Every structure is written in structure tokens, then in C-alpha cells.
Image 1 (cartoon, rainbow, N blue to C red):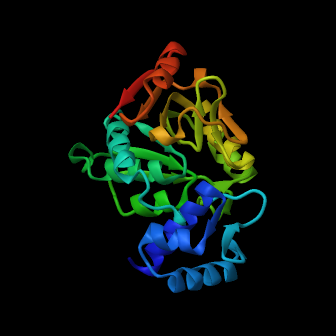
Image 2: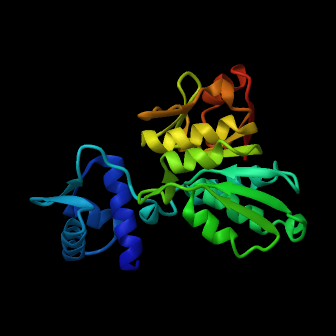
Length: 259
């Protein structure tokens, strides 16, 4: 395992558990304790974690793993979800994509669709995510609209009043939301309130709203609400989702697609 992959795995485990000791991490990743100690020390220098005697804890009171460190956890599920979401989008439509790992996969699925290789434009993509705009900008058949705003390092998303100004002037056919949490009673949510505000405005400018979320995001709550469940038209998730959870979404009026 490369150092980069090991660091990503360590940080994900820390987010999940809050605390790791050296021996536990070494066993999880099948490497030596010396390697883990060195990794912990180097990550602590970057303020990605707090070193403790015999291990490490997450850094700070409020902790969100930066997008560049999120890895292949639920990767196959996200790719299946992304393809199913991409299939819901018709040629020529204007689609809004929020930031996140799943929506990045949606962008990639759209980029390789054979019926979107030409057009004037084949798709109009509106996004506040710098990484998504960067990936799609090389596709000349796509019209890419990037909101203004201040870049948020954790998610590469542009936030703030400059982004509000652009989104207030446009309308789109479909908004695709990547979420941290989606609960049938409490709606879709993100960690950061400024990010949630931009995503909410994107929903308000859309004819229909699709939440793209692997099953690990369902039935969970997060700090900043994006929109109510009733504002979402379609939920696309994976088949590992709890059937009772999916039933509650259907009862709330959503079309549920599990892939």
C-alpha cells in the first residue's frame, strides 16, 4: 500500500472512530507499528490529527475529512449510483452538480456517455465544485458554468454571496445533490452551513432535484440542512440500503432507485 493510500485509510478510520491506537491501525492496514507511528507523526505535523500517547485522535472539535483524502470507501456503490443518476439526465438539459465524491462520479459518468459526445451544447453543467469543472472543461461539447465564490478547501466548493449572485440569475432542469446525510424526517444535510446554503439555492433553481447518496448516508442527520425531503424528487442509492428506510422515503413521495 502506498503512503498516500495509507494516509487516506488512516484518516477515514479516524473520522469513523474518533480515536485510533498504533497497534489497532497497524493490524487494520497490515503494516508495521513503526510505519503507523511515522504516519501519525507526519499527519500531526499537517494538523490532520492530534497525536496521543500510543495513537491519535481527530483534529479539533468539528472535523470533516477533506475531499482529497476521501477514498474508495463505498467506491463501487458510488459508481453504480453515479451511472444511474447520469442515466436520468437527457441530452441538452441544464444540470447542476454540487461538490462531493458521488457527484464527481456523476460528472465522470456523464463525460463518457456515448449520446453526449456532440451537441450545441450536449449538456450545460452548472457547478460550484472546482474539481468537477476542471474534469469537464476538457469536454468541448459541454457548456460549463462555474459559480463565483470563495473556495472551501475541504470540498473544493465555492461558497458565499458571489456564488449566490450567479445562481440567482439562472434556471436549470435538474439539480444533483451530494449529501453528507439524508433522513426522511429531517431532509438532506451537509456539515457546513455556507455549503448547504449554496446547495439549497441550486435546488430552488431546478425543475427537479435528485439526491445521489450511497446507503451509508441514509437515515443520518448532519448539522446544516440543505432542503426538506419533500423538495427532492428522486433518491438514487445502492441496494445495501435498509428497506424500511427506503420505504419511508417512498411514503414521503420520492421516487427511489436502488442500484
